[in-house]
Amino acid sequence: MMWKTHLAFGFLVGLFLIQFFRPQNQILFMALICLASVLPDIDHPNSKVGSKVKVIGFLFEHRGFFHGIAAIFLFSILSYMLFRQFIYAEAVFYGYLSHLISDSITHEGIMPFHPLLKFRIKGLIKTGAAAEYLIFLILVIFDIYKVIHM
Ligand SMILES: [Zn+2]
Image: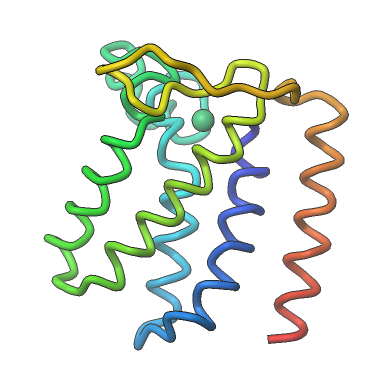
């Protein structure tokens, strides 16, 4: 999916979780969810995030390790080590997970257990096609609705 669809979905997930977790630093919590929601595409040299660190895209298969469950835990642990609070590890966990869930409904799909298993979950959505733009639009409407009704 496009980075903006991931961001719109990650932001929505964050808006729901912020009411549930009630973090002390709400801005940091939301920033981490949003960052984590676009982070997996670091493995794609032409993506918004990956183009900043092209080397990862050349070393790792796109939608391989960085689009799997192992990477969710890796980045959640890194976040915990950085902030020393479990809540910010959770922010990264759910933001990252939101990316994998939305990629799993695309044609390319994801391999959640990569590199252990090549088992792939996939759906019918083509990245960048009209259906994705519709999903993006619906997410933005939900985002705005949720912000207004917080
Ligand atoms: Zn992706």
